[in-house]
Length: 433
Image 1 (cartoon, rainbow, N blue to C red):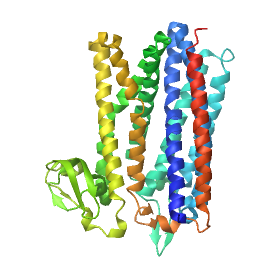
Image 2 (cartoon, rainbow, N blue to C red):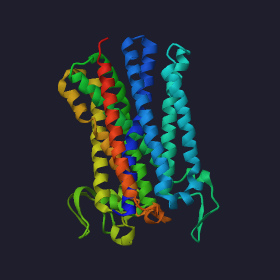
Image 3 (cartoon, rainbow, N blue to C red):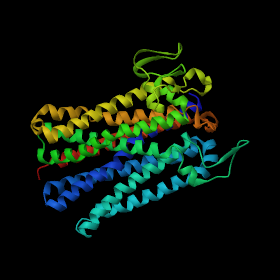
Image 4 (cartoon, rainbow, N blue to C red):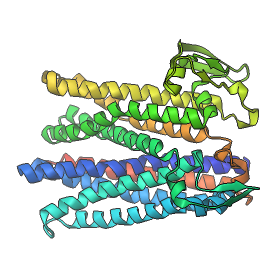
């Protein structure tokens, strides 16, 4: 395996791992503080038990996210020194601010975990809010740095040199808002449905049904609202990509021929040799409208771009179709929940209702990972879009493949450990004592 392939695989593997735990760490504090607030307002001990159970989950994911996130920070320098040599001074600010947000989150979490009965109840609850807000801020700051890689700004590129650096302009790059909004909503959708599904499974098993129904309602409310809002964010992101990265848009749709009134493809099998898509469903003129707001707008096809600037079309297309397909399912599931909760409450007594949400448990995170693949693979071969190629940024030091194998083993062990800890927490939650 070549150094470039090994470095990309290691970075992809650690990001795929980290993004799950980072998103859960961002979102679960909000579930926790809602349950805590309900306990403060009602005095119902079920909410207190749920709050204390969720705070342990928040602590587990905070630690896991911190460990995997720290590893990623080192990887940027170790695997991609060519990138960091130039990008460090430009996007160092969001990474520094992310570190500050992390420390605020850590301090607030310490107050929350050990503040029971020791500090004012209102202040104690407020420290939980700070944990959630700081976590979301941390995620937005990291996504801003990634947005800069897709829409580099805040510098002048002259004769291979990065000059006249403006860190604030780099931080507020053209892609940061759409990417951050899409990522935050994806995190709430994925975590909301995953947590709701876990509690739905416990309800089916008749374990502490009152507690799990309350937990389910809190989690699915967040997840459903985010899923319903996600298409708005997706539309903004697609229009942004169409303007700045037309080759990525063409790869997402596996659109080879430039055309006006371009159709939108649903499904399809990509044949990269023949440069065509078979067995797709084509919706006339829909891609032109969704990308540019004009049914007759011209959409550039992959055939109009140099071969060495085209990403892996099959991977990008399949990942995009997966993201959109699963996102649509979760949107419909969110509407189904609200309709059932407000119009058909008797459906909540049926086992099939809970089985639906158990089935949906992993779909949000599969969609989230697919979306991240679209963002990263779709940008290739650039690590900084139109400025620096990925192959020019990789370390020249040999043996990266062994580092990849080591990370594979360590992160697999970490995953098993987290799964075991969460299993213990669920068993503890189901304890009637």
